[in-house]
Length: 198
Image (cartoon, rainbow, N blue to C red; front, side, top):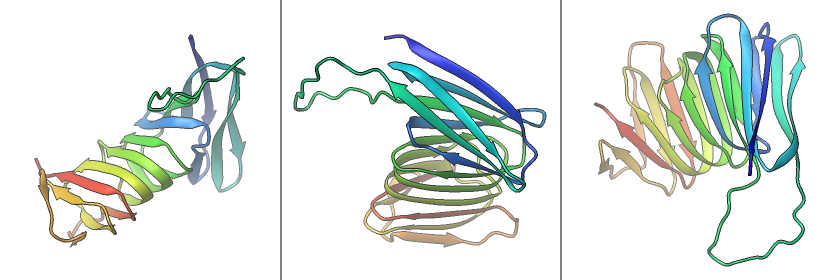
């Protein structure tokens, strides 16, 4: 099946970018020079796909819409899985942008210099290659990965594991306060948190 692409951009004038993950398997957030928000949407098995921007005074809302092909017959086979007919979005934003991402099941990779970052998902694999200045992450189940830098952290998992440099920690919470202004806060019920210090 062919992969289809949609590219859209809009000038970023708002204080906040809100992103809905509905219809996506993965989002990657990157930094771009200038004052535009650029979105590259990649999807399989779709006839039409839309990147929708809704501009307001205080925020810019970004969402995605897909119209999938209908299959003639679908056969259920136990233990054989196929990727969902959804998409991957690469979102390029100006430096120090504030972002709020919400949704259900979507993996997130952050590789951008962001100001405030808020994430609220049901199931996710989250990777912070760069940690935003102020981060608040909530997810029900999945995994979170990042390299610890010189920031304050406040982490809690109810039934998951907390691991630092490959060693599982006996406690499910970790709180460290640093003098700088960077803060990382994570709350998860069943999720696992993996931190490295090197």
